[in-house]
Amino acid sequence: MKIRSILILVTVLLLSAAVQAQHVRVRLNFPAGVNRYAPGPAPYGGAIWIGPEWEWRGGSYVHVPGYWAKPRGRSHWVAGHWRWSRHGYIWVPGRWR
Image (cartoon, rainbow, N blue to C red; front, side, top):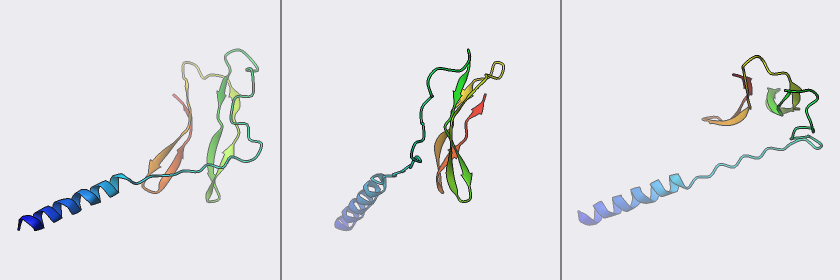
């Protein structure tokens, strides 16, 4: 009886270690020539760089280039980001807050 309990315990420990050892790999392929950074100085005082972003179109994510924008009152820009869901990573668009 003790041996059976020990074997069950070892099996549970090995399975839990295997579950915790899973890795997620995300590969984002930026199109050639995409500028991923702000393109130099702002065109006017107070301008905010927005983007780049991603949009879901035709069954896949499409790169949307960044742009300069005028702030909206007291709002500030919250950048978009990737978020894990049970269907994989999804893009959460940026927004004014």
